[in-house]
Picture 1: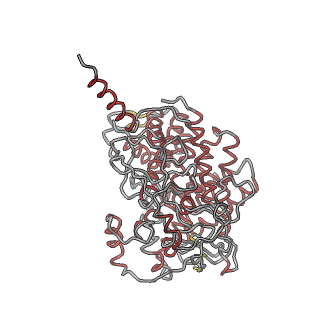
Picture 2: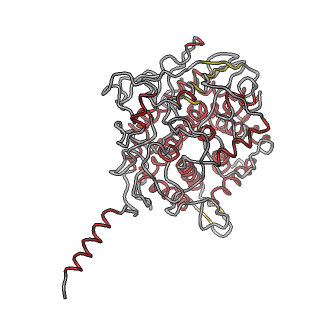
Picture 3: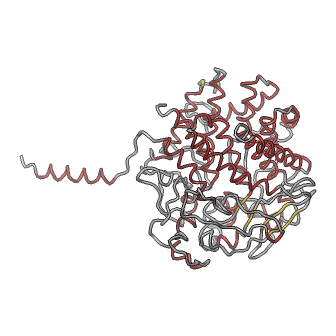
Length: 555
């Protein structure tokens, strides 16, 4: 028999197999991924960078923030691939970084615990500045153009645009303007005891430029909003961030922790005293909407802030608040979502800790909602209704999908810890779900993100040999000021945005928006829904990775 065709078939099969991505369970270096997920935040820093800055392709930026009000508002984080500081997602990022340290910090190597605290403090130092003046809130917001949307048409307009992939786009596709608001958004708050600056930078001008943060020359004018205007959503999240971070710093810097808690209490007092969404203020409505409206209501942030203050202070005042306001503020609404704009699932898991470990049965309704949420995540459960991609990724429409995978994975691992400490399980009707099953669900998400997916691609930049090369990120895609010290103006960056070359600066640790519902991913800088990293994708992943780094043999 002639063996030549058989050899040809073998060579052809070998060639095809080497070109196909591997999709198999593999061993992951969770410790490496943890270190890189924390390092990412150094690439998002705004302000004066310290001598020990490890991301060396970044330099000082945003040094004039606050000057028009004679206020020092430097620091904080750029939330994503742009050069704007949005306070609401920054506060949520801070809460989740702090929760990661509170729950899993004792599992972290000492150097990574230190790096995590440094990352938290870079945000909290800024948030403290935003609450530094009495009777005033700051908004840095200069509009390149202005228009008004009739309030009766606003919700319809937002819904149509959020569901459409053909909405108006800015020059660099940083999101159509409605979708950008949904993925990011916000501004500020203030009261008779404090001031806040929650957004710094002009989103319109910034998103029509492709320039390094070190070069940015778009407007960063500060506008003020005074009490008693409401902003329960932003104030509530800021209270949560400061309260949670006070717990993270309690052992290493008790004085700083006390400062954080004191300001958290003031922020919550404002949030509860002047109830309403910040975008309800007539003097900022046209500027805030439809760009950065509160889409899911302010009530969840009130309960979220109270829950964190209860945990940070052990003050029965906040226990009573959770007991007495749960129904009126929608705590019983089984909304199976957790992110910067919707705190319901996270709130229920957080409060359940006191029910499970402290036998606080007056809060049982929160635990019932947490149990219900967990059951929706278990495919074997009769109440399962969370959507998964064919490759096993938790999927929700709207872009930047990995934010859902990382936040839900965090809740799975945190709730598993609470259940394990009390030897309990969740009754999902046809199946009882224990800590092992919850951790198993979380591990599937973690491993998918790190490369066990149909694309064989790590969605964390710099992890493994295969990861996105063309992320939607200005600083990463433009040459570093160290390599190209000459100024690159707003439109001069277009050549880099449109280039098919990999980004010159590898943004190590950045987790991009992620694949489509069918698990496909095109490594395309223009496809911001998939290729743009955000701080609030990474923050909860820090805690999840800390758990699996300490338990690498979990399977």
